[in-house]
Image 1 (cartoon, rainbow, N blue to C red):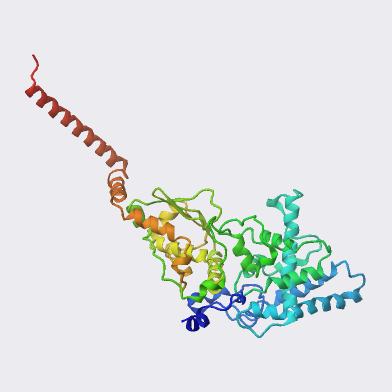
Image 2 (cartoon, rainbow, N blue to C red):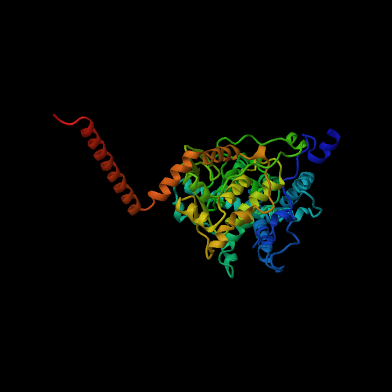
Length: 453
């Protein structure tokens, strides 16, 4: 049995799986564009891929990567003369060559590893992270307010890229969170150590810069908790660690559990309107540490508010694709999306969750039917095992509660007689008249059996 299961479901515990994968076709669901960059391509997986047939759409920022190399080398304190430039370049390339086995091992399957491309992509990302780390430090020092902080420094040539594409840097931020558009974070760390101006500066500044760069993205503001730079696989993984996980999240599993076949699928729950009819009340959870922190207490299904933007589907799709391809993740985003897919089965369910403050639609020009299918599109082709579903306990409690008789009777009473003030008033008047009739009957019977003297 072990001879059959081990090669199929697991590897040796000392062997670490790749962290950057090509998104499987069954997950894409025909939406290839959600996994392709708009403005900048990073890494070998998107080297020969493009969006909508425009092969030259990345050329402008591809040339700009050389500007990032020039700026990072020019700021280095070791450069006293221009003739020293090749020395520093050779040092960076030699460092990347020494990391080539680890870089190759980070990808599922690629033969397109090139030191020069890694240098360009790594310097481009390093330049962005250092820039936003500096912005974060200025804001913390109260030199400028966060709401009026300038993203461009003096003599920074980032602004030259906006001509003809005014919002290009916003698209760059989204592109850096695509699963297929990643390079190993150790490349950025290596270039940082070779090009830093302060030998005592810690690589934690890269995490600070990334958190500031992605701060404006949702599903909710990123957590400020410390993330060890050595534990980061790539930028999408860093963002995944930053979005916040429920307080009861266990430590990441090792490969031992994958030696056995996955358990059966989890039990799911009815849609939002059916739950409300069955007596389960849905409300927005206040003070949650993460949008994933769903709970159930005394008949209330509490779900933190989720704000939906135009880029939310692309972002959540890539987070789910990361969970579906990299085995050492808790799979919480997938479980959350499948739960919401169960709750939103119709436009009435979507409106109900919006009225309860659970969902806030900030998407431009999205019609009701597209809103309803938001979570079903996210869950296309994805799976989660029962023993890895952190919401399994919540789902079990909700199903047990909504199947009981008393919550259903109480919900029916409220829905039929107290949903309308006129109906409630008529019911109260009828009860009052019934009480008077009972009292009249009682005193009439009492006076008959015990007449007054």
